[in-house]
Structure formats: C-alpha cells, structure tokens
Image (cartoon, rainbow, N blue to C red; front, side, top):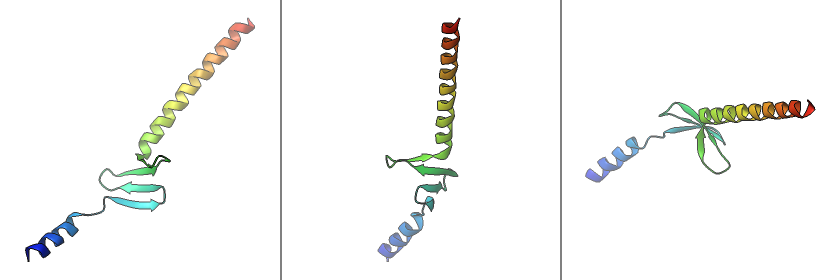
Length: 76
C-alpha cells in the first residue's frame, strides 16, 4: 500500500514544467518565458537573446560612426 501511495505521489509531483511549441521553441511554465533551442543544445530565454542582439547592434553602430569619423579625418 505504501509503494502504491509513493508511486502515485511521484506521478503527481512530476508535472511538466515546459510546453513544447515547436521543435526549437518551448514555454517555461515556471518563469512564463519563451525559450529558444540554440545550436549548442542549450535552451536560452528569448528575452536574453533580444537583449544580446540589441547590445550587438549598438556596438556595430558605434563602430560605423568611428569609421565615418576616420574617413572624414583622412579626407581633410
């Protein structure tokens, strides 16, 4: 009887924390965030991917401005 009770308790306690949306996207029920599967096999929150892309685009914009300033300096 105790074994049946413990098995039942395990089954109820092992709820699925993720809802698979497609093969590379899942919903984390605990955090409420979407996660994207990376090529490395790691699941990363979509929010952190957007932040990383935004940071990269800002750094490339500053590099473009630096190049433009150098071109102006050489043209003068």
